[in-house]
Length: 180
Image (cartoon, rainbow, N blue to C red; front, side, top):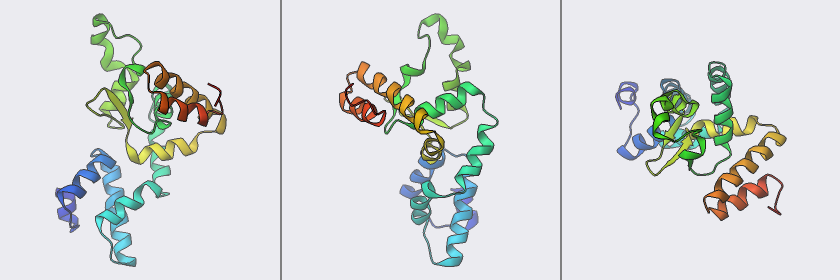
């Protein structure tokens, strides 16, 4: 809210909540939103809502992701790729190797918890986790067809194991395994 006020960008509480959902307070993504707003204002009067509608389709996200992924380890990148195929929050427990009480102390060191700390993955409060919306499409679009199919197959198994059959069907169809 302070950044928007200082930049002279009018906003409503709903738009602020939407901006927070897209960026999770990530400074680079907030700066990108402000830059897009400024550029759009030069061309034609635009609102913050216009910027948020355009944000998922902005080519500027790819370089941000390229730079960011260089700083992540392989397990973190792999997990982000796996989460990119889900259309809705993925089950949190699917990404935990050991859920025993003895392992609870070590959980803060898992890739999932590091990504939550980095604010690239968000918990939904209902036992699910999801990618930051702005990165989901960018990551998904960079996957090879084979990798997408493999990840959709895994997602189908995760959804089917929890009785989420409609979601499982979607993933199996995307994995080119409709017979599953």
